[in-house]
Image (cartoon, rainbow, N blue to C red; front, top):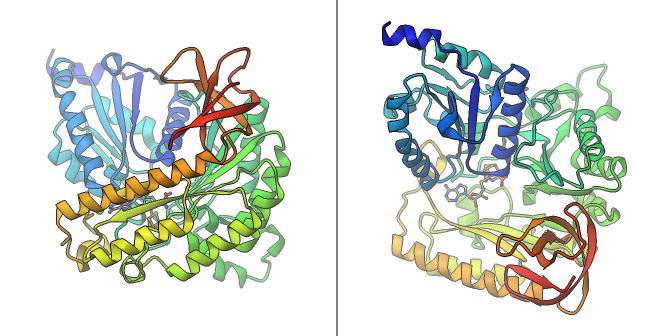
Length: 466
Ligand code: SAH
Ligand code: F3S
C-alpha cells in the first residue's frame, strides 16, 4: 500500500487543541471543541495520542509568533513517525500569514482564521484525504451565537462569554483589526441565555469578552459600521437596540447570584451609563481594565488611539468618584517609535496619577501590515526599551502593593476558584477588584463565596487567615 493510500484510509478522530494568547482565544478554543464534539470527534489532552493537533495562535507581538514556531519544531519528529497526524494552525497567526505559513512551516496541513471555525470538520476530512487547506475569509456577521462552548479546561466556577468580535479601532501598532476583522456584536438574548445556562450548571462568575466591550451594539446583527444606515430603514425599531450598558444592566438582573466581569474597555467608548450600571449592581465586579498604552499625548496621537490623555484622566476621575472602591488596570507599551525619555516620564507620571491596581506592560513590537509599520520607524534602542519596561514594572509593583495594603486587617469577600499553586493545603480566590487572595482550605469549597480576613499582602496577593 502506498503512503498516500494509507493517508486516504485514515479517518482522524482524536483532536488535541493548544491555546495561546488572549482570553478570546481561550473562548474560541471552547467554540472549536463544541463544533468538533457535535461532529463526533473527541477532544483529548495528550498531543502524542492525537490524530489532529490544533494550535490556536496569537500574533500580537513577534515573540508570540516565534514561540509558536518553536513549538511547531517540537512536533516535526512526531509528524515523521506518524504520517497520518494532521497539524492545524487556528487564530490570528493563521489569518495574518495565510498560505505563507504552510509554505514556511512544512508540517502544517490546515490554516483556519477566527471566522472559519464552522468549517473545521470538513477541513479535517480534506486533510485526511491528503489535501492542505487555507480558510481565512473574515466575516461581517459571524458571532458563533448559536454554539454552546464546551468549557473543558474550566474550573466549573468561572467562564468566558464572548459578546463582540473584531475591532473597528485603528490603533497604529495593533494587528487585531487585520486578524479579527470588523466589529460585530452577538445577539443579547443568546448571551443572556448562555449566562443563565452557566448559572444552572453551577457556575458562579462570567466574564464578558470582546476586543472593545464598551462598543457593543446589537441592532439585529451585522457590522457595527452599518448601524447608521440600518437606523434609516423605515421599519427600524429603536427599542431592539442594545448597547453595552443595557446588556450589563439586564445581565446583572438575569443572573443576580453570579459575578459579572468584562474585558476589555477602551477609553473613548466607555460611556457614563456604563459607569452608572457598574455602580448600581453589587454583582458587577468593581474592576475596569482600561488600557491607555502611553502617558505622552504626542505618542497617543501617533498611536491613533482616538482619545487624549486629558480625556482619559477625566474618565478615571469620574470612575473613582462614582465607584470609589474600583480597581483600574492597564496595558502600556514602552518604546513606541520616537519615544523619548520625556515621553517615558509622562507615562510614569500618569501611572502615579491613576495608581493602577495591576497592569500589563510590553515592549513595542513592530507588526507587519499595521499603520505604525508603514509610517513609524521602530527606532527606540532595545536597551532603552528594556530599561523603560523595568521602570514601569517596578512602579506598578509599588502601586499594586499600595493598593493591596488597604485590605490588610479587613474582611474581604472572595469567590473560591481553586487550589493554590504553591500549597495543596491552601485555596485561592478573587475579590470583586480581581485581587487574588490565598487562604487555608478548612471546610471551604471551590465555588463558595466566603469572607476572609486579610492578615498580610504582597504586590500580587492578599494573604488571609480564613
Ligand atoms: N482591545 C484588545 C487589545 C488586544 S492587544 C483587548 O481585548 O485587550 C492587548 C495589548 O497588547 C494592547 O492593549 C497593547 O498594550 C499590547 N499590544 C498590542 N499590539 C502591540 C505591539 N505591536 N507591540 C507591543 N504591544 C502590543
Ligand atoms: Fe487593538 Fe486598539 Fe482594537 S489595541 S484590538 S486596535 S482597540
